[in-house]
Amino acid sequence: MFGSETVPFLLLVFLGASMAIFYHEENTRVVDLTFAMNASSVYWPGSPDFIFTILNRKQIGNHWFESNYFATAEHGGTHLDAPAHFSKGKWRTHEIPVERLVGPGVIIDVRSKATANHDYRVHISDIEVWEFKYGNIPQGAIVLMNSGWTKRYPDKSQVFNSENTTDPETFHFPAFHEDAVEWLIQHRNISIVGVDTPSVDYGQTKTFPVHQLVGANNILGLENVACLDKVPEHGAVIFAGVAKLYDGSGGPARVIAIYTIDSSNYNTLITIGIMTVILSILIFRFCRL
Image 1 (cartoon, rainbow, N blue to C red):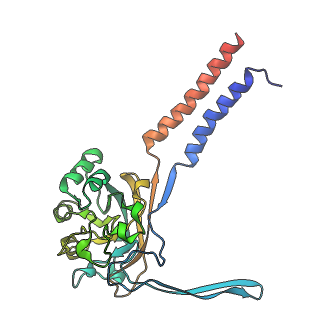
Image 2 (cartoon, one colour; image 1 turned 60 degrees about the horizontal axis):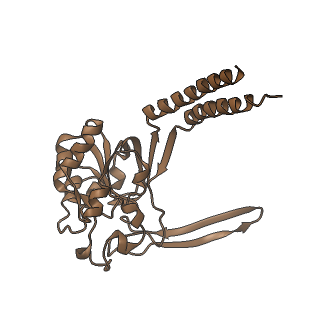
Image 3 (spheres, one colour; image 1 turned 120 degrees about the horizontal axis):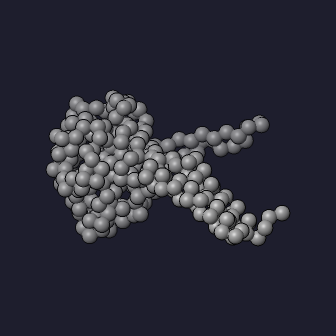
């Protein structure tokens, strides 16, 4: 039915067209930035253990039925800190305006620095580097540190970077420097400061200045955020869902990011697809000469 030169031509045309169609339909990404809650979840020392009890898991007549009981401290696994956590009179969990739980994602990548120095703290200079590349941090931003700590979770000795996971004085992990957070508060209108480590204050803190700063200014905190290497530094929208716990100081969070493929990359892929089709036509005509 087709000549020998026609089959390669059709294959190339199909490849080019498929690339354009595929990337048009698949240019949106949704990323889960949450660790599952279970008995392995990492909590700050002094918190009670996570409890999960199966109440029902059985067939009842012609349908299946499951229900469970669970108990957890507020501040464990991927979780949100309400301002009241470290600041008297500020928002408790149920008082947080829902619009504060969603915002433009600002991912500060300090993986190389945190690898070299486990006590590294995000500085103003790191924020300036981000803004040099992408412009001013947008209003209502959710500013997250990516230190590469995700790969350590849920091994507590790795997460706290200590052989004694019950003694905070031995902890060594990166977070934000209070000067950087103060700068964000004074110069940018942000909603959340978050980290992929157990605390927005670094492991060797004694006074938790970042917790105090964000709380006093009704800014939320996110801790143990997962998989930030799967999210672009700029261009994502972050959602931090948390149960509306009355009088709570925080709670387990379901954090997700939504973003689209960078438009320049998308346009490049479309161009490649079109050029592939044109090249196929030229090759086809040349082969017929």
